[in-house]
Image (tube, rainbow, N blue to C red; front, side, top):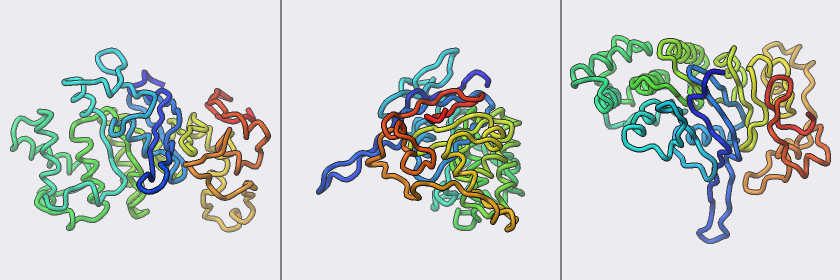
Length: 330
């Protein structure tokens, strides 16, 4: 891996719930995660809904403050905690760390036209010298993301755009400031299947031209495999990274029982092969509560290979066969 551009060290995030009329309870959405992403690198983050993927992405972007641990950004030849950045350094970080959100329908102000979503960042960060130049650059951005002629979209309101068009505009806005790091949070999950590969290829082409690093968040292993081919993938379960390494190595030979379970549930087009496939015999299909997770390994209540140590001791993320795995079996 190249020199890390951004890294999380022992990052945790705890949310409180309830408390109005009952006892306040706490959810540890992210639990002591270590993560590094290098310049121009792709790391796909995969897991079930509610496992903490989006929370981790927002922690990396400093949209949420960690309850413990730190997120550091490489700036001026050293790593600095993003929450300690001030003035010019903070503006540089905010410009270089951008988000492509999951819901394209919530990315734009419904009361403003498309042009008003694209030109302000160009003017704020002095990429454009004036409004005329900003409008010209906005037109170029729309051309890049496949919306042409751009003049047809400038005066439209979001209600007059399709989901695919809204997602392209969200991408155009994210890349308008030429960021070094983008969190793509389920960027294609709300799009039609016919549009997904097109948007994924668009993001990959942007990476080539801008040398942008991605934290690509998804629940779909097939999408992660396509987007992060020849790159790295991390598997997340209830706030913890349980396996991380080269994408194809993990897909072809998953080590952690949870990774094996995810892969076994990927749909197979051929019904004959699907019927022959043996699914892991999980101890339970129920996902444990984040409010009161099981002691030891959080997967032990479902894992078909669980032993007594799994119920007592939290497994460490250790190097096994050229990757990182958090499992007592290894």
